[in-house]
Amino acid sequence: MNFMRFIKYLKFNEKNLIFILIPVAFIITLIFPLLYLSIFSQPNAEDFSLSFTSKETNPFYSVLTLYQNGDGRLFTNLLYAVNPLVYNLLWGYKLIPLFVFALFFIVIGHFLKTLFGRNDIKVLLFSVTIVFVVFISRLPSIPHAFYWMASSLNYTVSALLLVFLIDCLISQTVMNTTDKFSIYSFIISALLIFIIIFSNEIYILLMLIFFALLTVISFHHNKSYKYLILTFLICTGSAALTPLLPRIILDKVLPMTSHPINNDLISAFKLCLVSTFKNIISWTLFNPVLLVATVFIIVLKKHIVFSGKLFQILTFKNLYTIGFMVFVFMIITLLPYYIFRENSHVPQRVFNVQYLFFVLFWFVGVITFITVKENLFNMPRGITLVIAFVLIISVFSSQNVIVLYSDLFNGVARRFNKEMNERYDIFSKSKEINMIYKVSVIKPLEDKPATIYFPPDILPNRAYALWNDAYERYFGVDEVRFEKDTLRFVKNLQ
Image 1 (tube, rainbow, N blue to C red):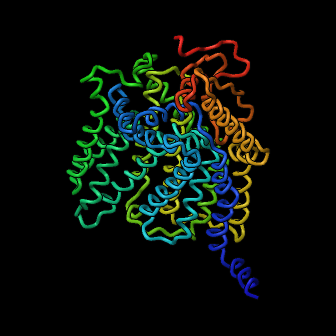
Image 2 (image 1 turned 90 degrees about the vertical axis):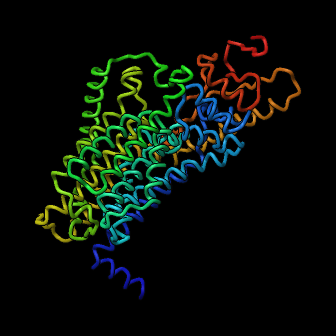
C-alpha cells in the first residue's frame, strides 16, 4: 500500500521524479563505476619519479631542491612530496582519485549554492549532477583529470581551487550586502591565490590579468570593495614573483623555459585563438550531451526557482562580459605551451582545464537565459520525461562512457591491476636477492585501460632512461629492463 502511494506520488509530482531520480540514476550508473575503477588505478613511471626523492630523503628536502632548481610549483611539489607512494602506501594512491572526485563535487556544489542562494537541495543536487555528467562525457582525458596523480594534483585540483577562489570573491563582493568584509574570508582568498600560483605557472598570467581587470572595473564604478580587489592584485603579484626568484637570484631556468622557444608571442597567441575556437565549436555543436542537457534545463524552467542575489543582477550584457573573460582565460591556459613546446604537444590535461571553465560558463549561461526570459514556451506534460530519457541515452552513447564500461566489464582494468602487482612482486624479489647487482626483468604492459591509465612507462632498451631510473630508485634495484631488451645497462660501471 505504501509503495503504491509512493508510485502515485511520483507520478503526479514531476519535480520529484526529475530532481530525485535523475541524480540517483547517474550516481548509480556513472559515478559509482568511476569510483569503483579507483580500486584498479596504478601509478605510472612519472608518479614514481615524483616520489623517490622524498622517500630517499624527506619531503621538505625534496620541495626545496626542486625550488632551488627553478621549479616554483611549491604547493604541487609539496603534495607530491607527501603522497602515499612516498610511504609505500599503494592503497593510499588508489584514494587520490576519490579525493579529486570529492573535491569536484564539494567545490562545484558550493559554487552553485553561492550563485543560487538558499535553494531546494534537490535542485542543487540535480544541478551538480548535470554539470558533472556534461563534464565527464566530453572530457578530453579522464585519466589526466582524476586517476593520474602527476596530472590530477597539478591541474585538476588547482583548477577547482581557482573555482573556489572565484566563489569566495563573489561572496565577498557581489553577494555582500553589508559592505563589511570578513577577515576570515580575506585570509582564505589570499591563501588560495598563493596556492593556485604555486600549483602551476599557467595561472600566473591568468590571475594577474583577472585581478587587474577586476581592479580597473571596481575603481571605475567606485565599488565599495575596490581596495579589497587591489589588495588581492598585490597578493597575486607577490605570489607570481616567488616562482621566479630562483631564476633571478640563483640563475636557474624554470621548467617551462627549459624547452626551446618554438613560437613568438604573436604566433603563439594566434595558435591559442584557433585552438580555443575549435574546442568551443566542438564542445558545443558536436556535444550531444550538452545540447540535450540545455534543452532539458530549459524545459524544467517552471521547477527551477533561484533566490541568489547574483541572478537578480545578472543580465545578458553582464553575461557577455563574463563570457569574454572566460574566453580569455581559456586562451591564456594554452599560451605557455604554444610558446615553449611543439605545437602538437599540448597535454590533454590543459584542455581539461579549458573544458571545466567552458562547462561552468555554459551552465551559468543557460540558467541566466531561463531566469531572464520569463515567457518561454510551455512544453506538453510528459515531454520532460522523454527528454530525460534522451539525455540518458546520449550520455551512455558518449565515447568516454563507452570506454569506461568497456574497461570495467571487459576485464581490462582488472588485468592491468594484476600486471602491475606482478611487477611489484618482481621488484620485491629482486631486492631481496643476495647479489651485488640487482636486476628486475619485467614484461611490457599488455592491458592499458584508457579510463584510468596514461603513460609514461619504461621503453625498450632504455629509450627514455628517466623512467627506468624512476623505477630503479623507487624500488631500490640497480636495473629495470624488459625481457626482450638487447641493451644491458650496468649502473655500477658507468
